[in-house]
Each structure stands twice: as structure tokens, then as C-alpha cells.
Amino acid sequence: KQEVTQIPAALSVPEGENLVLNCSFTDSAIYNLQWFRQDPGKGLTSLLLIQSSQREQTSGRLNASLDKSSGRSTLYIAASQPGDSATYLCAPNRDDKIIFGKGTRLHILP
Amino acid sequence: GAVVSQHPSRVICKSGTSVKIECRSLDFQATTMFWYRQFPKKSLMLMATSNEGSKATYEQGVEKDKFLINHASLTLSTLTVTSAHPEDSSFYICSAYSGDRSYNEQFFGPGTRLTVL
Image 1 (cartoon, one colour):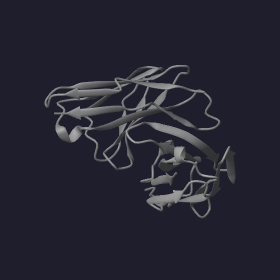
Image 2 (cartoon, helix red, strand yellow):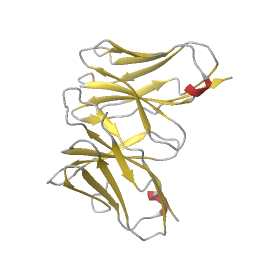
Image 3 (tube, chains in turn cyan, blue):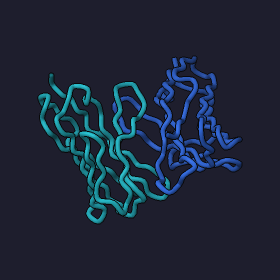
Image 4 (spheres, helix red, strand yellow):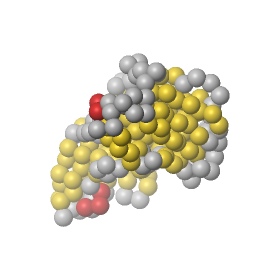
């Protein structure tokens, strides 16, 4: 059974800092891995999708890496802004089932 | 991009009533849709996989007689919470694959917040 762990559980940093969110998963036989953000009381916004054959994906200030063999992914956020404050969810997809981590609650201090 | 909608976005009901939540793929056909729920400050948990024209597959611990899923067309899946109780209050989200399965990307609806009084 896939288990997903996200570290740290919560993070507060001043605006402008670069930061890294970590995700580990136990079953490496995945199709792909998605990173989402979720604002309080809202649905999910897809940020990046990395296929199992890829090592990383970039979108704007976001960069996600995937080391499938070791069951790890990281989300790098450059030059953080207050609008980045949200919960970030890591979601590996295996056999059409997405298993979510508990997320990292990020707070960017103005 | 592929768009998934849900209706209603928010519902409040009395204990014992049944509530139906709709999930629609707006610009693509979805043979498979997924239903998740999220309790406050918890992660999303997969409840069931909805297959067009056949029975849904439920995850362990999810009562199929309580959470009825009907996937009657390629663009619509419904989740009915029967005889709802306060402990069913949660955020319910659906997802679907777009027609292009080469990326295996699931697209999520905006969610439905259910409050049972």
C-alpha cells in the first residue's frame, strides 16, 4: 500500500526566500507524480506533473524533481511571495490511483 | 485544458436526508472518474473509482450502500450520500482523466462542501 510522507508539515518563511518541500513515497512503481496546491476551504490547483520517465519539470518559479527509484520528489519554490501561502500536496499515481500526502502548510511572511 | 465541474459547491442538510453530488467533465469524455473526501485539516482520501456503465469500485472501509455512485454517461458521475449524518460532513472532490491518457493526468473538480446538521 502506497504511503506518502511530506516534510515539513508546516513552514513559515519571509517573503523572497527560496524553499524546498519534500515528499517521499513507499511504492516506486508509479505512472507519474503531481504537485498540487490547496487554498483553505478550496479545491486543488495542479502545479506540475512529472512522468515516471522524467527527472524534473519547471513552471515559472516552481521546479519539481523526481527520483523514482528512491521514492522521492521535491518541489522548489523560488523567490517566494505571500500569494504562495497555501497547502502543497504531493500525489503519486500508481495503477490509476492517486494517493495524497498530508501536505505542507506554507506561510510566506510579508 | 480539461475542465471538471461539481454541483453543488456547498450543501447543508438535516441528518437522515440524502444528498446527491454531481461531477461533470465539461470538454472531454471520462470513462473513469474518482471520488475523494477530505476531513478538516486532513489529506484527501480516495473513496471509490467510478466506471461508466459498470459498478464502482470502493476503497476499503468505504460503505458502498451509504455512498452510492452512478456513472451513467461519459460526462457525468454522481455520488449520493444516503441517510447523511454529521460524521459525513466533509469536502468531497471528484477527478477524471482527460481523453488523452498519454499523460495520465487527473483533473480535479472544485469540490463540494457537505455539512450535515
